[in-house]
Image 1: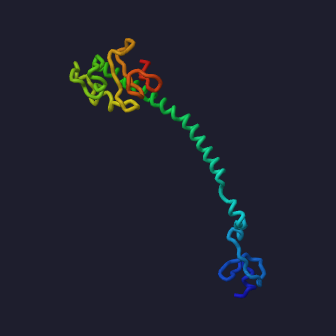
Image 2: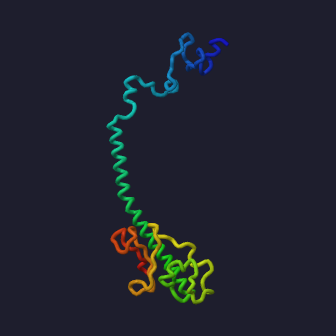
Image 3: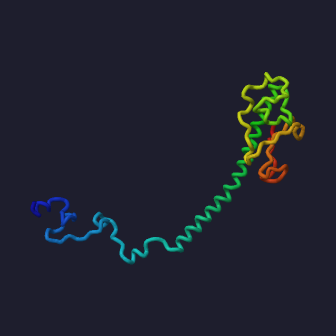
Length: 188
């Protein structure tokens, strides 16, 4: 195959490398950077290589901004976890209260303070009419409060109610303020 035949092709071979067509036949092949052969930027020179990347000051500014954003998010998100725990405790207390009401409808009385909430899972020995107790109990599992402690049950309850179910709060001690305050289901 002669050079005139290969000039009609879109690319010409030069010693194992391809060079774009349109160059004269007698020209030696040019060393082309792969990115410039296809219209990309020229290869970086010594000056450009030093300018690639980020300076220490730029990195420090970015890290400062990321740290500032992390603090803002943490300040706004962490208190929501405490609120969510209180809401979960109130929901659990309301559910246990409903189950105690069903227990009372079937057995004509609430469990005693000694029987406690365990009477919702297993029939107490002192039950007057054991045949009225639901098979399988009134609740599958007794939940613990969000801090991992069992819910408290007292009968009679405060303020003249038949019973009270409550959590001792984050500190696990009676009383307290804020997240340490006892949690009751106020509406019944």
